[in-house]
Image (cartoon, rainbow over all chains, first blue to last red; front, side):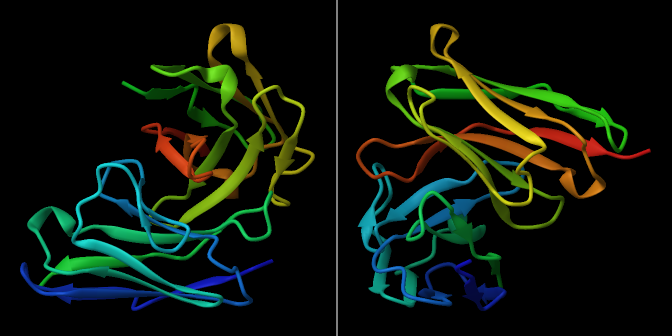
Length: 108
Length: 119
């Protein structure tokens, strides 16, 4: 099983600051990695797919990078609505999928 | 508008059974693979099961294999998850999610239905 480890567990920042979230895979997943945002009481929403492609309707301040085992989600300038939990997901060993444990982005 | 609405959750005793449903609308349901993902209270996401558009291919996480059965009725635009031999560790919000045709990722997701396994 491919394990995804996200860091940090919690990130405390202020609106307007830059956020950098990390996801590390236990073995190469090539570019088969996605990022999701989940707000309290809501379903996850796809942000980034195939490591660096923004999903439909996702603002340009969200960007993804990386390949192999190390991936980054960057939010260039935090808006109040961006404070949420972020999960990475891999499908390299489809049909099995795994998710990271999540990073909580909170207001400082 | 694409919409997925789960139902069927509730409180069930250990060893019991429950059947979840996911009603789809706003897209050609029969053309898409579908998935179930769960989230234990205060925890992360766990993929549970996937089914191809024509039900030809079905996959399960090891944690539910032999106990859960995924199915679909394309005529009714509905996805199902039959859950048997339920355990306390199956307690979670269960989400259905579409496999997006262009990206092959889970998009969108329903709002989820809570399953609580407790005596």
